[in-house]
Length: 481
Ligand code: GLN
Image 1 (cartoon, rainbow, N blue to C red):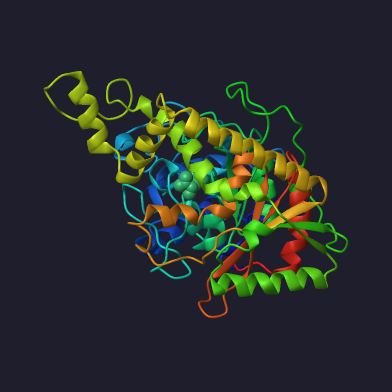
Image 2 (image 1 turned 120 degrees about the vertical axis):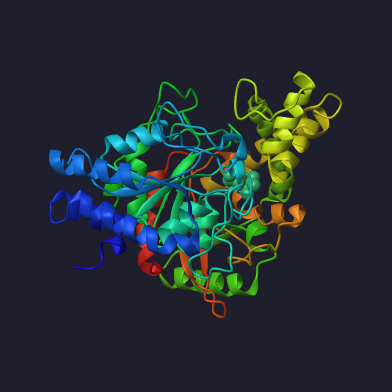
């Protein structure tokens, strides 16, 4: 038998359901792999080994159940999903000792489907960043090359899947945080339509942009994972009533005749030669397979980075106001009264990047600047959304790069926030428009040998179509893991 930790999620699910392997064997294999790789990769903030094995034993006793499609599968969740009784930090000192009293809806649904949570994965503090270097608890390394970043903010989730610690994991994507690390680690990942997955019990960053979704080594694995958690939730008023389709049963659709729009502003950006060469070959392959590629111009996309960083930071400054050390989060010492308590708690427990966002957001929302910054950014958001709707009306999907660079050296942009924010150009606008997008590997850079990815962007709630096309793309671009 192949090593169990190398099985894809779909393969493992089949063997578990047919009792060819037990939940304890599968969970045990993942935990053993985690233990072997974790000293180098550092993808996890908390490992729930004992709890996971106990759950697996209970599952084995009850036996598999076709109504529980994730039965016995070891999964990770990014450390922003609340897990009952299991520490949830958002990679922030503020929540270093926080033990939630309930499960996030996503976690609850995963457990109900039979999954076993083995670990909470690392991220940039409060999901603000694109390299996982802004975690308060140390960096995560890219399994393809340990001197490189895994991407972010769901860098732990992507690195964990790429290191074969688990067959799948959940992340969140506010401006690219599922797609970009998936791409830098050679995985597939989907950012669902805004409202497709409940945000209940997820530590909030920017509520109008945040969306949870899976990362895995195969497109079908992502489809099965999304199917288990998607759908309305009375605890999240922004969750959608739109019917959930049976994503796991998606069938590959032929690439011939598919019309893909290429937003020129994303393709003509400053792409690293490694990325450019892989993507050029990818377009060639697609044309060879009979897809029709049409360029679009999207003038509003030039304002993406500015608009996103104003809006996301504004929402973050409001969401993070609850961390006052009085009603919420850890409290720093100090005897000078309430104001000093606030100041010392926030200074002691929030990292530099989070503080930068709060200051930026508070400024953009303050009287006298609100119209000039927040309101203007909100108008740009509408333009971007309308431009996307127009472009998507004329083709089946849009196709775009995910990151202008392959995984970069640890430390490279840590002191250069403006350049660093610019690296998010290709992912942010999808969140501003609330659209679903599937990221998948397109190949390895010819010189550096690092993964390069692409994203397919669809109309709202067209996840099923994304998976069908994604399955065909996976045949054209063989998986890297
Ligand atoms: N890199 C972007 C940011 O720092 C997006 C992060 C995310 O999607 N959570 O805001």
